[in-house]
Length: 141
Ligand code: HEC
Image (cartoon, rainbow, N blue to C red):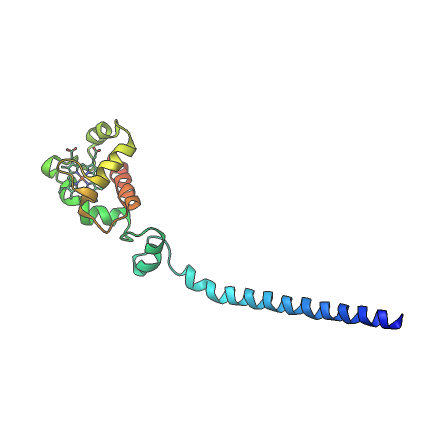
């Protein structure tokens, strides 16, 4: 009889030790995650100083819509060169948007007539081009 209880106690003791061992690893894991965390949080979206991290999300230029406009689209869309609808020309953009914003996005990404694909910003992701179209539309009301 005593032998039986002794065995049970041994099992119990083992379980307690095992449980605390697991608690230790959980604790260690938490500490490890805590130490790793800041590295992943350094790069904010749209921060061009850490291209690799933002590119991991959606391979792109890492530039803001305004920056993309000023570097890739302005030459034509500020002057109206080659018949480009000018930024700020509300009537021209309203007419273009008549066919639906998705179509306008697609034409900006794939190109149409004098409009080169992605406005020549080949490092821009589709989403960045869409954001730049939104920027133009926002500034043409
Ligand atoms: C080389 C000159 C040029 C550059 C650079 C350029 N565009 Fe264009 N874009 C045009 C012309 C020309 C049109 C009119 C095409 C047509 O409908 O015949 C146009 C049309 C558009 C349209 C309207 C499409 C539609 O469906 O009506 C959008 C949106 C647009 N451009 C966005 C951009 C963006 C964003 C950039 C920069 C990333 C850019 N463009 C750069 C010349 C340019």
